[in-house]
Structures are given as structure tokens and as C-alpha cells.
Length: 172
Image 1: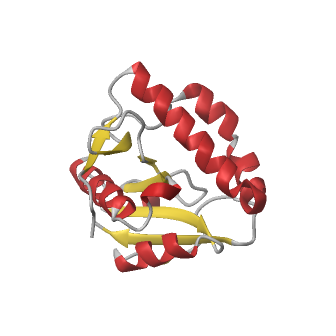
Image 2: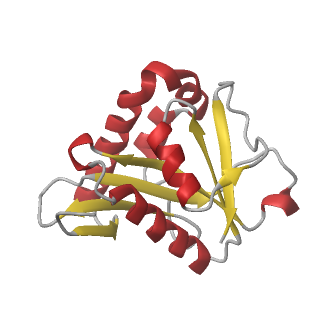
């Protein structure tokens, strides 16, 4: 599967926070041609400026994926309590995966799968019973990955204005 070692680590210092900010910005730029309405709705600029923001322990986190001992990360993923218009009692124990991105040179080597596994384990440890995410219909490889991890289509849980947004979730 992989031809190198993948190390997934929680962001732990300012240099790693800066690296996370850069990789999330790269992710946003890479899909902004079809997800700009979603990103505008989410106010990504403010999120980047406020990092780690909602992605902090014990109910959240921000992780970077590293290849062997390279200086730059090859991926990023985040966890936070789900933001939703649904009734509070319905979402009380639901975590949300955000900002999953693998840089192009590292794709197809299991990096995204490992990041998702780490986040799902962290979500269970935080007391979440479910994990949800939203994605775009254009992100075919991501959808295949999520489905292979047991995610299924769920009801709309946020106010994303993009009609192509898909909603997936699973029990932990």
C-alpha cells in the first residue's frame, strides 16, 4: 500500500500550526473552483486566522501527516464538535471531520485513510458516538474512501448553500 512511513501527529507547536494553516489554504485553493460558495459560507479566512480555533482538545483536534522525516507535511485533517441547525440533543455526541487533504504527490498511498482512522479513534476517545462530514460530489476519490470506511449518506446537517454538497456519517 504505502512505500513510505506515514506519521500522523497532532499539531503541537507554532511551526506545525503554521504548516497546518498553509496546507488548509492549499486545500481550499485546490477545490475553490467548484466549492467557493461552501468556503464563503464557512468563512475560511477567519478560520485560518483563528487556528486552532474549534479544533482543540478535548472535543477536537488538528493533525498533520508526515512522510518519513520530511520537513513539510503531506496531509491535514481536523475534528470538531459538529455545527448544525439540528436539535441539540440530536448532535450532542457527534464529531465532524473537517479539512481533510492529501497533497497530490502523496495520493494513492493510504495517507487519507490513516488520517481518517486517527481522527475516528480520537473522536471515540472524546466520547463521540457518531462522526459526520460534508463533501462535494466532485471529490470522487474522497467519497470512495469515506464509503470504504463505513460512511453512508445522511440528512443535511448544516446550512451550506451549495446544492452539490453531500452529507455522510457513521457510528463510531
